[in-house]
Length: 223
Image (cartoon, rainbow, N blue to C red):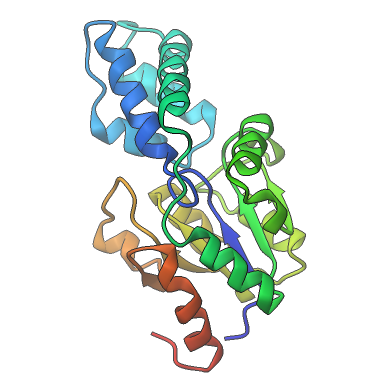
């Protein structure tokens, strides 16, 4: 397999922000004397905002309001990031440096809106390694639709079938598979079902493993 580009999710894949977001949702709901179920937070991951609002409203049925709860969550996350920064996932810069040396474009495809995503990528020092970024507000249909990865492949000058997608979320895995890319799952805060696992080409413990995997695949040693 000749790899023309590597397409990265951001939250939970490049940076440890999904954990921070989960903590924020739990705190925001507790402040309003209710609980945020884990399954709901997991369904939010990688999804665009409108479906998240619908899922939130369907579950809470007016007991609490989405935008107020999101604002409380964002305040908590801002406090947490001021305290601990934005942790980078293990192996990120090893992989980005490897891709740079191999002249394989690295493109981010994130559901996060432009301003927030660019701030995070610049803050952690990843921005300069990237050949392009597609933000959640640049596509009509968010993950699990394939749109964001199809546009990311185009930005990388690559055919989707010659791209690797790196994802931690179920929505992201489905989107990458629907785009025709080879999907690698790097687990973060969720476990995937066998049905979702079947959509991936590999599951690895961290980004540190991906350079060796790319070398193997380019040498014809595919899993």
